[in-house]
Length: 189
Image (tube, rainbow, N blue to C red; front, side, top):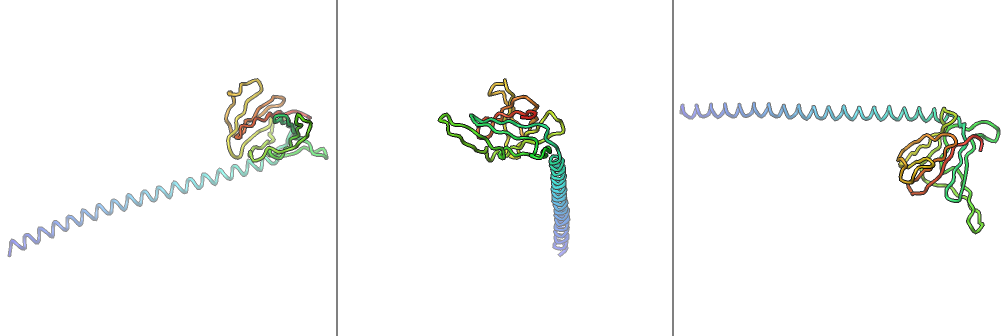
């Protein structure tokens, strides 16, 4: 009977030690999971705040952009077609803000003599006014585009989302569709 009691006490001690060990291990696992969950929540919150700050900066910049005045006109050619954007309204006031590339009407003449007009559509490229009277900003709200100056080789263009173009310098935009458009910012076209 004493042997059975001693064996029972030893087994109880072993079970108690195992349960304490299990409790400590479960507690450690819970703490690790809680730490991971807390870290994930903190990171998600930081990303949300960062995205919110970025949106606010973009909205502020967009509002500032809408108030900037165009000092330069734009000449565009695409193949045998040409178009333009005047920085001055009909009433003599200067235009402000942004002009999407697909709002500029291009006019062309086929070698047979037939005239045609069209818009370069769905490129998500905008021509923006800047604070400098000798510069314009070209930016893409979608895909990247390639830009190069006159005199550079076809393979020397730079892939960008936005670029500053300067007055009286001819630039070539290579769009996602591989069409090449020449853009020139001029004073009073």
